[in-house]
Length: 185
Image 1 (cartoon, rainbow, N blue to C red):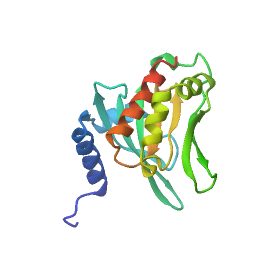
Image 2: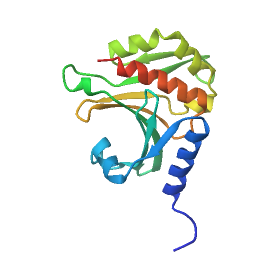
Image 3: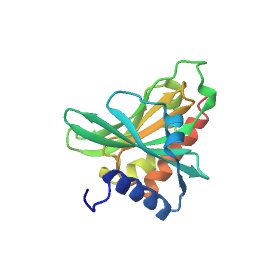
């Protein structure tokens, strides 16, 4: 065994320290509560690396998730919002952020549109403050986009972004999305 720390511990520790440095109160959860929160496994190549509890925000938890495939392992941040009102009354749909560019292929992002669940995407599309925050972010901050995935079986909704330590502006934007998700029911 080498003297180098496990890369998982380094990622989790760096993420926790970064959240604390931008003024977010955090608490690392135990592995047993991690499984209870996110379910055993969502797919054969996807697993939760860690779960961090967030205090005083609309976001309840942040999870570092790894997805393995034949091409390698990709990491994502999932901001989880507890939404117990979504337990099977209506069919909820996944909602994605679509970036509109001018010119289309390599151009600058000039607008953001949300597509998916009609009620949630309508609310997000009419939140011009959120749209302005997302347009002001650095291009690399939204590298993988933002996807909102409801999970009524587990009583929460996941807001998934690419794995990158969030800037204070990105964290505030995701927190604003979480407020919309909490009022979605």
